[in-house]
Length: 84
Length: 171
Image (cartoon, rainbow over all chains, first blue to last red; front, side, top):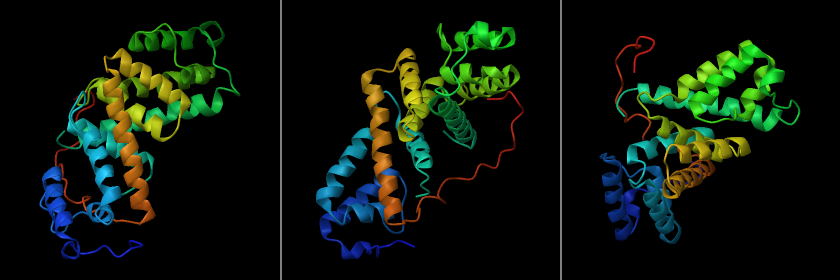
């Protein structure tokens, strides 16, 4: 159970709702509701904005593919004992 | 990266990476690594295979630490060599996974060793920074998720792999 109430997408201002649409494209999946982390990051755009851009920069294809990087992210999450 | 096979391979890499890291970071100071002469002929034969696999004259510390039991060394090395071999995942990708895990678990040995392997396999500083970036950002996301006790909304969207268990030696 989250320690905060995750707001419904409709409770966010319009710019954040546009970002939720972009996150569907990023994940290539039509979520019924924006992912919990997207909603958390949209709580404070001055934090979530640069954090999200750093993530997208790190995950962009380069010497390693996006798929290879997703697996790196998964093992890092595992090493951090995080199930999210 | 379809199916479960790549994920099994990745998990095995993570497992043996941690196994080597704990022996190097935790044990090496108390049980000094053995050289070929001190380790004896059985362990030295394993060392020769290790050198060939890494194309290096040195043998990683944790393997020299556990050479006190040559039969155990041989089995551990068998698992490490299998885990890091080019299969569904490339050896280069596996070294990136091992480097990221070592960074996340703060293993001084693992960081140094797998960074060296990444470079030896042709990964540039830019490529290394890509792995650092992913490890750093997902170390952030995971702690934010844990702090707020978020539940995964992606755990059930991956397709189920209904294929059977492969023959030993396949892919």
